[in-house]
Length: 417
Image 1 (cartoon, helix red, strand yellow):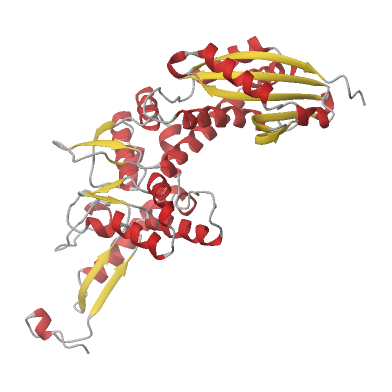
Image 2 (image 1 turned 90 degrees about the vertical axis):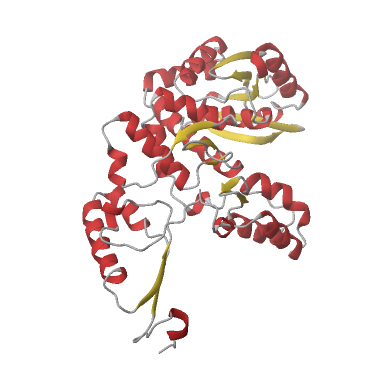
């Protein structure tokens, strides 16, 4: 028995109990996804009541999780507990690593030159009045750098968390929500009010506007959004915190786009056929039609190379769905790299595709740059070496939800085998 009399200020008898529960909302999330949410709610409610309300030996407890679950869900009957969220000032520094802590960590490992990359990828969270880094990312990336100094930056948190909520938003997005997602990916802000206490059943609310409000609240609570500054009158100015999280959005969008487009078999097959035969006008027409149904990146704060990567990924997903083709991305070809290179062995046909972002809608300039890059880097050489006799060259310039395609043809007369 510990002597707690001096600490508590009164006579204490029995064995003191300290309860620490991490990720208390994970069982509820799993139950919601798999259809037994009500049963899990009843179980946890009964468990919490026994541990936290009627337990005479309880000294104190700490419960952590992503979502602030409403009292009527699992905390019914509990009292005398305090809630500290990522919007609160007190304890904000303990939600992750501060800038000073990251600098100290990198200095300890001799990785001071990696700070800017760490900041771009893993910083950006605003908790209370402090900028916070994701600790899981920082620690794992430090470990990568200790293995090899030129290690690529990776999305470590992405692989340790569920992206179901992002997928849910995209699959059920209204036109307004799609427009707001476009703004976020483009580096802009979206202003929203929050619902601080949630139950998972709220996500199934039949009112579309109410459901979207709940979904935005979940995105914020789970780290997919952060505050761009101090909320005013209950309105938060949300942004995507860093490169890692932006990548999660983009991957989910590309996946959603691929499923949606390829489900229209006839139109998708027409696109593939046009690409295979060099019908570039039809490629352009169908690609514009596809893009009009998706989400774009606006011409705002995001770097040009990131905008190009977004459209590159969308196109790549469409092409990879064609099982007869050998498709490579950013593959070495000649003296440089091609955005996309594909081979159709049966037809002895190959394609080289270079994707550019046409800033301000300057399609001609972007297409000219893309085609020049194809020619200067000798991107068709590997296709010739692989026996491709017909080689289609596509320079594609994208801007918002439209594009322009410039075409070139090269016939490999030196290999007729």
